[in-house]
Image (cartoon, rainbow, N blue to C red; front, side, top):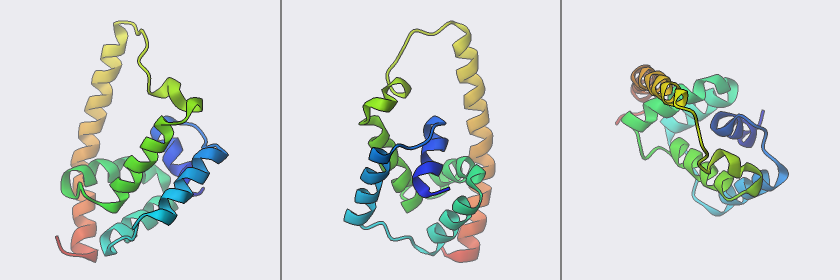
Length: 131
């Protein structure tokens, strides 16, 4: 799986189309997207094991919010938001009251990921850099 596919699957659970891939490649080519030692190791692990992305994302949000990994993630999210093919993921729609329970459970899951993700990121920081 390439970067665009991993990020699209993580953010909206779908495959990236050619337009999104082209825009992401253009973003990478036109911006300073160099990784520091810690981000390089984290990104390498994400590419090897895409299932780790939610854990690293949550941990980086707390430990290293200015991380290049998060910058790429948010830039990719902005690209997705501009594409009409994916608007259904970003526009509000009418939901049942049960959706509140779902949102609560997603929040619980996110909190768990944040705690364990922060521990994971701190391990990478200790091992590959100092911060």
